[in-house]
Image (cartoon, rainbow, N blue to C red; front, side):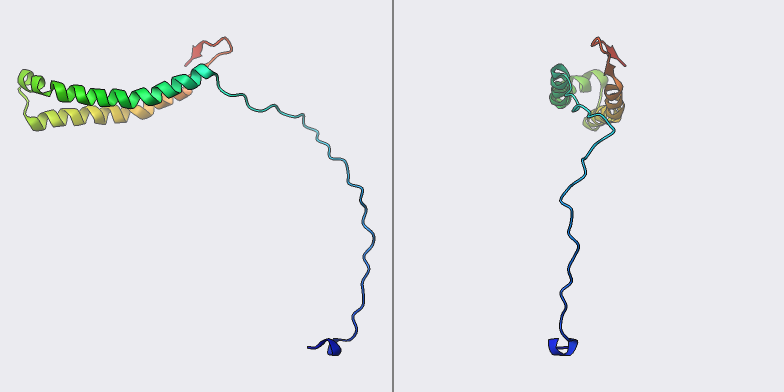
Length: 116
């Protein structure tokens, strides 16, 4: 359709809009920002995160270093030493979720004493 077929266009005027905006109010008081955890707690978490893998590696190295003595004292074969090492790390892996839950549930009181 061409503009000639539709007829003349009429201008439509809109009512004037108010420039007054309503005042924004809130019935709720402002909440303070969440406080950061204490520094000692963050350092403890960092130490645990860094020390647990190091402890696991040292344990693996200790078991590897003690393997010849274990073989002689307990009359184990090489596959049995490997099985013993695997069972140790499997048990440690099973224990980690429970240890994590215990650490998560442990809170400190207002006086700073741990409450587990």
